[in-house]
Length: 176
Image (cartoon, rainbow, N blue to C red; front, side, top):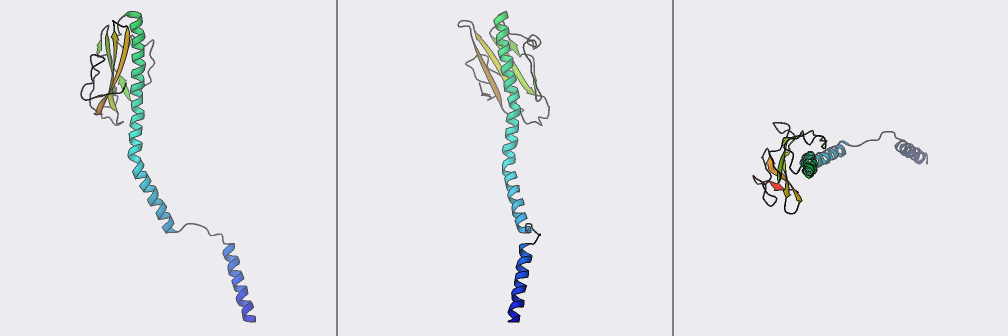
């Protein structure tokens, strides 16, 4: 009976030590599994993330070309011709540009004006495409049309068509 009491006391002490143990943590295997899963998720999501960053940067070009196009419409309404310099639009236009340069119109008449958005960095480290816009006035109906063209790939030039019914040059894509 003494042996049973000693053995029982030992078991109680062992259970008490296990229950009150302050050593907690993960095993090496558990940590390796988590690191591998995080690595796989990062490898899968990185290309998507980079593509979305480029698209967000390209939004600067399309939104600023839209602002310029609407300003050109207002200028045409007042002067019956499109502005042939950006300086003539500066009183009406406030452009915030980090990734693009908005150059002087490549064509400006009383029925057509074209603007380009060209990436600011020569090496195109921001991975953005070229954009261009065309604003067209139809004298018979007094209507305006706006077309924004996106370059097919990185560093590929694009130009707006000469008419509202035309296609973007260099296999560019109409986005508006």
